[in-house]
Length: 408
Image (tube, rainbow, N blue to C red):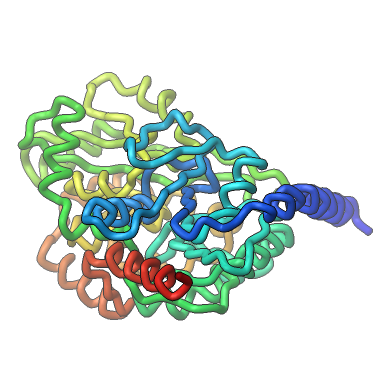
């Protein structure tokens, strides 16, 4: 056996052993009854804050609670419970025993990422997986082919075996998520709750974020949200932020030449590398780059912005729902594909202008044709079979209430 194969086998053995001991508190906590009005939520395996689809489902539940319907208790598992949460959400530190107790006594689980390997679910508990993308550009699961590590497949298959429902916002997801998530169960065509704000929150978010950062209401904002890099093939994953040769000053100048007005950049690094944002901001001296990396709700930021820029983030497909100009800045496509696997779409197939260096990005911005772009976007959305309509949260809570009513 080669050294690399031995290391992988040893790593898998340790992970499985850890998962066994991880499962024991879940069995012990089964002495406690299930609370039929208890819902446990999380984002990014507990690392995230109050955001993504669980947030919008929670707010719909709270709205109905206030309307006099069944009162549901929402528990939010967070590695850092001191993060900003509304008073009506009960945050619980995401330790093993607390996680085991609350998941074991909840009627519903709602998350946007996997559970911890070794988690056990009781028969009467319903697990709704919202996932954290409506359409993917980066390959996941079987889409990665030989680049999918064995341990990643084991963890994915284990978690998918616990799931009762996965949410979908388009026909593309109905076809792609089974192999992508390694999940072959029920797919609910409710729409994705995190997208609801893109239909009804544009004006509100426009005001909110300009007031939050003391900006005039008439300034324009480009949201720059690169994904993370590194370590996807190793046993222990390490990630890093890299904006390459992107020049914020030149970016702002190009936007002001093409669209007019005064422009600011919202920098939103991936949550796994958000701590590195300060090192990028410190280099900017013009005061036009604002760090929003630690704000939990990505889609509020999209709704507040006027243009979206990324490399491989799936969020660009959500900005497209608003017909928001979107650009791809991909200097390292060959290296990225070598690490992750072939992208789900060829970049040239997408309706977004693709730049491979700063000069190309400036040129795409200056030549941007909104009319042609919207025409291309509409065709692309039709190809995806998009059925988002801003009503997803209500449909998911209808499902929860329906299931609870049958149980009771």
